[in-house]
Length: 303
Image (tube, rainbow, N blue to C red; front, side):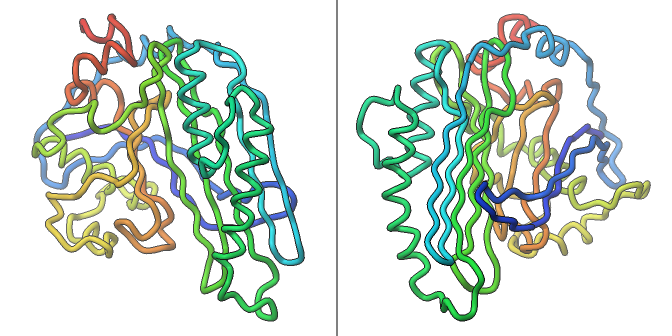
């Protein structure tokens, strides 16, 4: 079976000044195939065209931030906060951001700066507790950064990326990235419960091919064998044909539905965050009918 997948492989570089720590990522489109396989998937452009046709930017956001620094301790929060758009999606995204930043703020969520400040003050205390075992004589800086950024939007949904990086002492820092897609019709967040047949052999093959593509070397025409892929998945001890879904919920992008594993979840630390994107044309059979209508629209549901 041949599928098209899009991925980004991220290294871990922690650069902290007054802004947030970011990880370096690169994107490219590749084709992955099952070694020795004869099945194929016919991919048309119908859904891709629909996605392009419904492009929109109706959810307006403001940039709000909170920074605090004392000695070697640094905290940075940075978010794209919804200020205008449909009531349901604005409310849902605001609640998600508040929860992601700790949920300390219980006031009206129309004031993003006040929400960020209160969460930041709470997080500062927790962050210092997390660094309790760190020796100030042995480290140059200890940091915690959180970012929420609007990544992609159509007239039916909007996707936000949430990124956390921290170093509280020890061998190395850690970075976690998750995607969150919200329906503009009712504010619901896209999740595994909106999909179907995820335990089927066919979908398991999609997971394997997505990971095979992520770990394959660029330009390798022969592809990666199952044995080689298994060696990359050092945090997984089961069958290569029964790979688990990521713990993080999937999310929607311009090119399809993206699945992302966090560091150590399925592979070694330096592998970064293994991820792959299944194009809409391929993933639609695994979306429930109401999900297709909610996030992709009637045209996609009728194809």
